[in-house]
Length: 429
Image 1 (tube, rainbow, N blue to C red):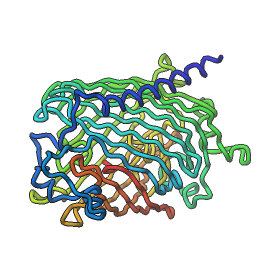
Image 2 (cartoon, helix red, strand yellow):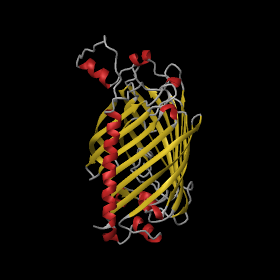
Image 3 (spheres, rainbow, N blue to C red):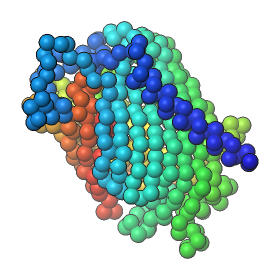
Image 4 (cartoon, rainbow, N blue to C red):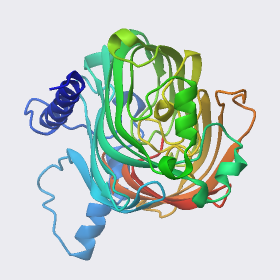
């Protein structure tokens, strides 16, 4: 059996093991217990406040006249399960399921909530994907472990690299469809070195195989083919495997739907051939989020800002590994555009939101947002030279008030007649 096939089989086995381990850890371990939605030191979700809020289960009890035994103390749900039935311009019509869970692994007053997200989706565009994303804090936040594992059969509409490429972006017929299989295994560990400060390191394997450039045979060329040839990459498979060092500052008062605080993570990723990467390269990866609550009485009135970016410092990065639209951990950035619509060796996305309650019981809330993206290419175009903007509005349905889980439906419009509905579980950032 070829060595590459052996490596792929081992990685798939590891992904399945990681998925099962995360499930057992969160849902079956009897020594762990679910906590309320926020840390005690930043508690904006008191018991009295929660009784005035109504989530999906509260509404269902009213509609179906289900009686609740008030003589027993209420037990917060351990997780939120949301069927995924909808449409996304990147994926087509989709069906699947998402699980979001929060737990506290230590003293609530000094330990951040840990989160777990499990997702499986199949779509009409032939995409099949499974993903496990985790963010664990040990007692007193001594350690923070972040994981992201993904196994996918994917289809991507490609429009070239860099922003401002009007020759490729005028209409959807100019897209170059690319099919490929994708395996990602990423783990990082952070050690607290001071109040809210962490320093960490990790490793990431990103493997793309069975790459099929659908228009290549017909046209004889494509953006993916030209970039790969210029930078000496195999056009049918490649790997970007590397180690990461990072520093993090985190004062978010809630991991899923924060009403205040700052999150800042900056790291260096070194893709190395001795780890199996096809080419050596160095990238600076930046993630900054800031939240301002505008009301003490209704803290759900929030202004939120997000800056996510990756800048190439040296070497060459494979085409489909170039940072791009919705290439963030939760594939939510750049609403209005499909996954990978804009990409480049250096890429930056800026987003701003105003979040506000609509109903007095907080069952339905709203959001208005703006975003802007910029990317370089490998033949002279610089990052920040051209910009692509998007804007839109959306509704949030309170799925589980104890964990602040929400179902998100956004409508966004952008340049080049790009528009669509974007569904998701929990806030975009």
